[in-house]
Length: 153
Image (cartoon, rainbow, N blue to C red; front, side, top):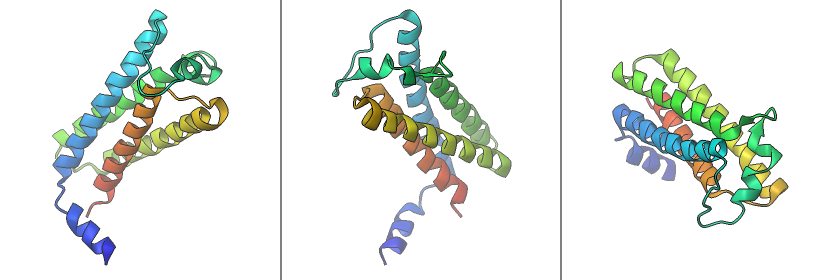
């Protein structure tokens, strides 16, 4: 069975490795959103890599929440929260189930927001921002790590 092979292949991943993976992905997210936030605050221009449309995305009304909170700030807070909670749980040996549940809820919320922002880029704006795509992919990886961590027996 293919599923049993896959489960067997990934069963060797330890909880420590999953926490470290989550910490690394959250650091990547912190760096990514820090750059976008700094450019937004300083009024700079984001250097678009590999795709065109960063200006379209970042200057659209969708780049802010409630009309004034930069989406990059929300992402930054998300990644900081994931990092702090994952670090705390890792330092406690990952034995705090309530903390893992909170981490999973954060990951699901991040995934939903990333899905929405990806939809906005692909369907509404028909333009993509490299850093937004990196953040979306990164959030998927964080969700996968946390999901695996939470439901790994």
